[in-house]
Length: 169
Image 1 (spheres, rainbow, N blue to C red):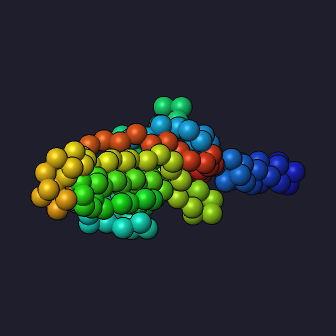
Image 2 (image 1 turned 180 degrees about the vertical axis):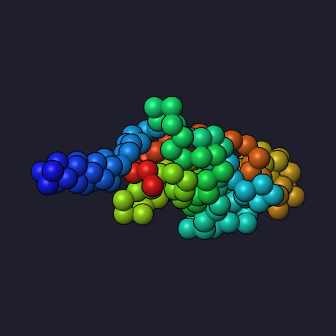
């Protein structure tokens, strides 16, 4: 009887240990496509931002691996202004380039060290040039080019920037 009890306890301990040891893990490979948007209502213009400024983004569609939602739509993240040149006289256009940086993980999956899901990809725009006007008319020397502007209502493609292994909670 004592041997049967010890055997049953060993089986229960092994089952409990294996349940924690084999928590669901999933790798999100580098290059996995994601779709993001900037916060609506934010003006993203070369005339208003400077290099290094951060912007809020959010995930538009779930990131799924093997049919499981790993990162849910609506996950918040950040983007950073990589390069910016305001428009200037005579007729020079403004330019802006924004790099997608990371998404904060939430929901059922987390990284072991608490790190975010790194992103790669950019959104960029160059304003319109008014150089021709500035050369045709003497008053054109006082005309600025158009600012580079990124549409906050548009969906932008990005990708996972680095393979990460996530564990279910």
